[in-house]
Image 1 (tube, rainbow, N blue to C red):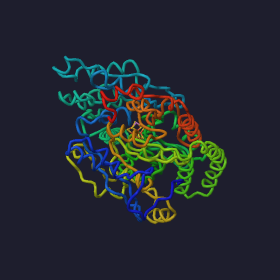
Image 2 (image 1 turned 180 degrees about the vertical axis):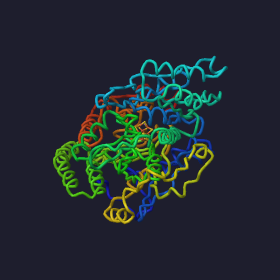
Image 3 (image 1 turned 90 degrees about the horizontal axis):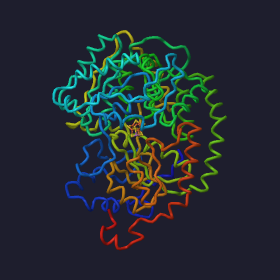
Image 4 (image 1 turned 60 degrees about the vertical axis):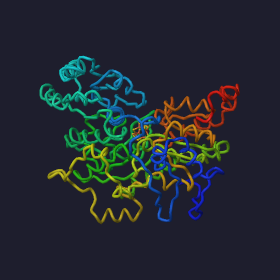
Length: 555
Ligand code: CFM
């Protein structure tokens, strides 16, 4: 990895000429003591020891009410993130119209219906029961059954899924009973999710609920074995801005057979026979590791962590998949693909680097991209001063090695853990224990994820669930050349004279995955950090000092 060398000896670290511990205390200064104590556990000065161990970071814990958080809700994680990109399931939001409307395609997940014969594509529609006062008072089950019937009559889909919003849980509608009833009546797969927005502490709870639901109701229901060699599933890739198309292009060139993707450019039939693949690849560990774990236990499909964000990371990941299959011809073909594509990308990075070298980035997003995108910035010679996730867990920061140490609190206990056992007929370990050991010796690390912090520089500030106040302080202190977050943060940050790149929806761009995607990203970042326009921007208080006196300027 093209990261700056880590200084593992010094005790007091420096961050862009400042003491990161001092910065941390400044971020906490304005909070009441109890809030400051809580936030202090979620703001950590990175320190990687000899064995790659890092300090403990507080994460996956409740946001203090009153702090402006970037987080979303459980419903968003289930309906919007995991199930939203599947084109041929009619996804009905059971709830007020806003929940359905605001989770409708704003994430820019794309799909290609031309590859399935029925051409079904329902993601361009927004389905909702549009709950009114009457349903809140007398119950919404009847209206839900009607909505399912109506969707069936109009579209004749293979499957219908129902997503519960906050009021559904509060009034106690039994969506699962309605789904069972309608499944019997219509003869298609109808299933529901109890993913009420208030469940858990963030959208992370929704990921888990979605994983459980798809695994229970869909995975393993079709045993048809697809033609093709080297069968893989791509887990945790959602085809934002066309990322999956670029990854699929590379898979095809290399000769891998993609059985299913969870869930970018996906179909329900692909989920149904995903257990016939021989290897699971995890891109976004946070949102989908549950499916990988359950598939391994029930069907014997092992998983490896890969990353297609960054040109070097893409090459490394392709090699890792080929190594797993232990096939000489496959490995040779992968090398050919890399040799044909990588040099052009590296040359582009080298040319752009002359303008981007040494520039400073901050990334606060989601549960995986704040880590993965540091690769692309490193390829441009840019330094990540500070990064953090919105809703990831300790394992995404510190690596899966800390899994046994994670304390289960009341909020996480609230989310069901399915008890999975090997399937009496379909369990089939794809590799023997010796083969796994042999591969591990060759560097194929099974069921492993090192997390974000071991790959960051010592002294970098890692901030979980960053608040608006802390965001403004960080910007005022470091004046980064680029700040990466989402639409809620975009214009506030840009009003500070700092360009913001949306790493959720990619603004209007993408793909950023794979080789071609890396090139797109370099070009975009070059344009953003080299633009002179930000220097001309003056905030109102800079133009009229009397405003500064009236409102104060330090947020
Ligand atoms: Fe995974 Fe995602 Fe992300 Fe995520 Fe998300 Fe997303 Fe994200 Mo927005 S599944 S954790 S819940 S990579 S929608 S495609 S960009 S916050 S970093």
